[in-house]
Image 1: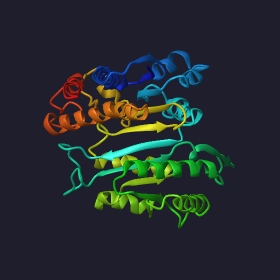
Image 2 (image 1 turned 135 degrees about the horizontal axis):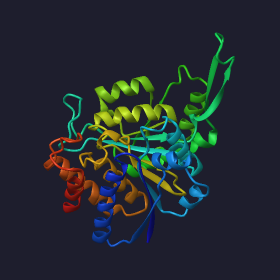
Image 3 (image 1 turned 90 degrees about the vertical axis):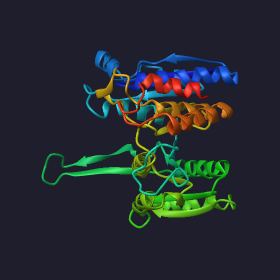
Image 4 (image 1 turned 30 degrees about the horizontal axis):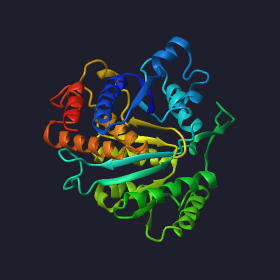
Length: 349
């Protein structure tokens, strides 16, 4: 029995979560496992009513679940940053979800803006450190609101945090068993303190994995190669800020936010899975938003809790739908409603 926490969130979040849960129900019947879900109303509406992002004891309760399924956070009537910091970042940090896992995979039938590239060329994974770096929120103002003002933002990196992320990336590359190549993405020529630590740790840990080929690329070069030669990459490991940037670029080359899914992983605790796109409030309630990213997040959730056969079947069903059914991944242009796309995935499990 798997206990799944569900945070539908804001905007179109509840609509895509509904389709992910539809696929979960079908998969549980087909692959003979049991689960139960509990909804948490964390998001913009709750904040507007109560001034509260996460209630007291909320995160402790989440630790009792096998995994968390998140729709989207972001409300047009709430100042940007409040919900993101108060819910997303707080959950990632407090639950020690120190890995952000982002598959970048172009499915058959999905268009990429890169000329001449297809599914065989775009299939890699970014392992992003998820709880340190610039996102730690450390820094200060000096002489604020004067002509001599200085704003200091600290990139906070610990040996423990860096090493556990890098070790996860090596192990993931080993399990993935494709090109067996792990690329460190950084900026060693300019950011000499943080990236000295990252680089030294990377090559020290690499000695324990002689079967894994290691490479290094500056973050600006990585962005360039994503566009020019995405087939060069297998698994990439990087810090929080650079990971945030390159995974959005990755989403675009895999077909857009409508197909991009990600996981916030605590290998020894509870992990959270979500579609990468935002809450898209302008589409709320219209039944036109693409749910495949949320269904892909559910596929990742199934893999993480150990239902590998079900996860594989869900991904194959997504691939069938993109290759044979959908006209587009864009909202309102799919040829189907949100609910109908979910039905198609279920029918082809």
